[in-house]
Length: 357
Image 1 (tube, rainbow, N blue to C red):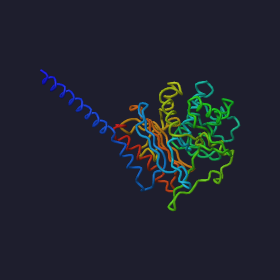
Image 2 (image 1 turned 45 degrees about the vertical axis):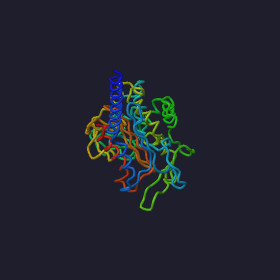
Image 3 (image 1 turned 135 degrees about the vertical axis):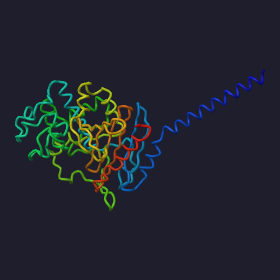
Image 4 (image 1 turned 30 degrees about the vertical axis):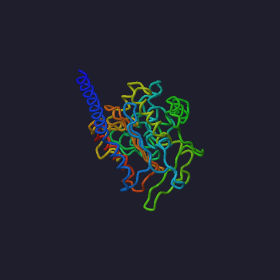
């Protein structure tokens, strides 16, 4: 009898070991992306990766990496908590602020620019609507230029359109755009996110660099001919500072109904106009309100990218997988064709492995 008990105990022990071993193997099989991302960001052609990557799923960190330097002159290692210029990802904030004014009854998507800015000099203010400013179908290429097409008939990415949205927000709310945005960040516990203000020392912001054949050159913000007035107009289009963790907080709350009403969130992520963007591939994809919507992949992607002043980035969300991906770089390549090289490759890698499939 004792021998039988010993035999059964040994069998049970071996069964447990076997099960644990199988679980470990399954874990290794599921994580089919970390090694590939590691290998990708070690490559040096067509350029080097210099920045941070944060991937979370269902609230859990799946991948986190910081590689390169925040200051090339001092060889200061970059950190996952470092602050970057998020450039055109700022547009998502502007879209949210407009939608919040819609919730208050202060803005109507179908009304024209003239309705809110009666003294605006361009005659096309009578025909371009708030909706068309938001979804890049306004035809605006400059505030002092004629429209390049009839509003609502085509797609053309427009920074000036989002500058006008910022002005409309200020007009209807009676508050400065900077104050509204910064207060929203505080409400969301995004403690390292803020609008960059001209002429002030922003100690939390890391350096941005231009990558050339001769190496990395520090981008001097104040030597680029930017005026205080011009910068205020640009903030709603590309003037916000943030880091990977705060952007993860933004995306998590935005896509889980913590920032907008359900109806306005649906307005934001739906589209009736399409355009192409290098960071998202060669296909035509939708443009909603401050977000690109890619229905061409195995799962829908909602996100945006940004570049300029020594920085490049992408962040996107995969609703079906509850997956958030953020890539921030403080390097902007002189070769425009490779500025988004790693952003595009990481998107494709994630969507073609277990995280995105």
